[in-house]
Image 1 (spheres, rainbow, N blue to C red):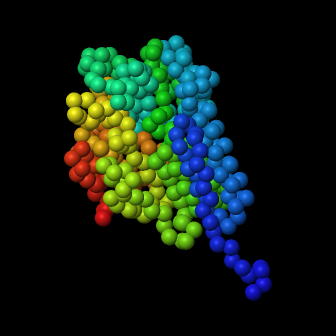
Image 2: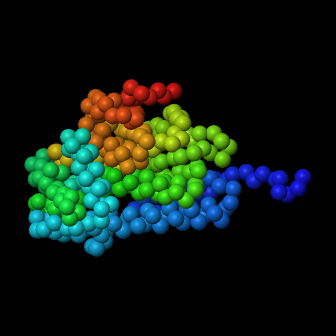
Length: 316
């Protein structure tokens, strides 16, 4: 057979690296290794660009410029950051404050989720800490693209939406560059498009929270974004009760009752942003909200290992 007639089978090229303080895994399907590696480089550069805008670990990031001027004056930011904040506030409104980017004022010393944490802070201390958490005190000025935090000491942070946003933007760039199939996985918040090299859809195992390497169910997730928020990786055990690392912004205390929430959505940013508030809202209210949202689905596992799913999903 002439060489030109040999068909090159597509392969999966993957790279794992630490970005935005998280483990990112970028996967590209291609017949050409050098091309695939160059596309992965493009995706990494895009995620690093977003990290530089959003990080709270760098004084000159736009996030920290906003925080430094809290209660003092508005700060002009890139349109991209402005629109991300605007979308974050919409999600706060939708979830009645269960999602709130102004959570940054919670002191890490109040919440140190490790084995050394032996008691909850008293309710009054916790309430005092969350006094500054209020998305309604973020003032957006469309005319000049500025952001103002009304109260001194207020801080915003993108821990609940940034990874999903970065995954979505990396996917968008890869599609523009001609990548027909791939996955961007931001530490469990992932978005997929196209198919596996063998032509089959991408699938995901939904982790069993009591044995997280053991999936209890598999689902096709091609062209879907998935985000999971679970207390099985980070929690405090106090008087025999597990407390999630997810804090209720209204009380300043950790939520309990839910082991994990998995959100499925066409968009990774929204999937990421909705996983935490559903955990805060609890099974009944959380499911009710997801059932009202177009194209969204969720799977919730409570502390008693009962599995709840939104109306538009069936798992076997």
